[in-house]
Image 1 (tube, one colour):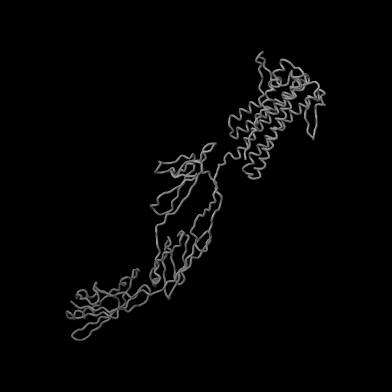
Image 2: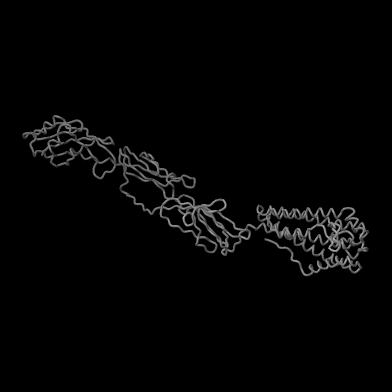
Length: 541
């Protein structure tokens, strides 16, 4: 995309040398041959300047082409180049204007030739090539030289400031100072100081003045070329060179729930396999100074190949891990920094085992339920019951309660990509709580029991059955006592769980070794259902 200055050819160097030699000879002799030689030099300078201008036009065309490809990137530099062209053309035309004014004032109209709509000077047709009065009149007396000096100074200042604000190098600005120099000239022989306009246009033959103007016009085009080439280079100055292009597919997640959308970015990634970037992982400030200690708080990647860095870190603990860093890339214009941040989630190894024949909710008790969906955060998952009520506890946990029926359902849904999605439902069997087991004094059914354990006020309890882990309590409502006293069966009923005084008197009459029977035990649990429990039979000790 860049362009370069037109290299000076041997012929152009020869013309420049002839120009210097002839201007020196003017001080010694102004013969016809020397004056005619100036015509040759002027034609050569004019041709060289035309070559510069043609090359410059090619660069401006390249600006137009690049602008169409990337307006945002190129617009700034194209506008600057267009401004350079405008000012260079205006200054160049001003020199042409004074050339023609000198010739017409001197009556040398025949030397002004128009061909194919273009005007040029035919130096051989100038009759009074040695005329020194008219050039001095136009350029010194009438102030033409001072006007050109002012325009030259403005053009030079404009170009240098343009390069400086675009962070150009000192060599370019120095060359502009040389090419567009308008300083005073000191005569080494006499020590006299001559202003720029006097040194270039006073006491010189007409053809020499025209040739000097042509030489300055060439310097204008050369300076223009240097600056617009510099501006062209700025378009790609921040570009990263690359020699490898890969197709990349990036997806935030490769685990997609059925019914969800798979999303991916597909793009071309270009990189330089020969580049030697440095990769750093850790926290850093605005100047890219890393915080903390190397090896503990930040790391420089050792695994780098083909312009890529490879990051590998152990994962001892579960959870979401985030990290930041930057890439340091050396470029001809200095180091470039590219910041990045990323993260990953570490999950423990797990397996799911579902008891397909034990999906049960019990009436009257809290049935704990944990709901989750693969790849979805718990706060994005919801559960709703049909035939049961669900109370959320947080972190995907719920309490289910049922009152009646044979079966119920739990439906699960969640938010995926901003949309609510159903993940299905599970069926649960509704069952009554198993009958509790009655007891008294901590003794098991069929065991011996002391008479003191059956005194008035002792009570029968109903505990949850072995293996039933749900929290629940039962209340004994009533029971009957049956004992054998003197060969006769005696019974007495009690309302509540406590042994009555009457029952205690009957028990006191039972002989040691005799049986004490508690029957018709009725209890009620959290489901409200009254249960008839298994009788208790004890041997009195």
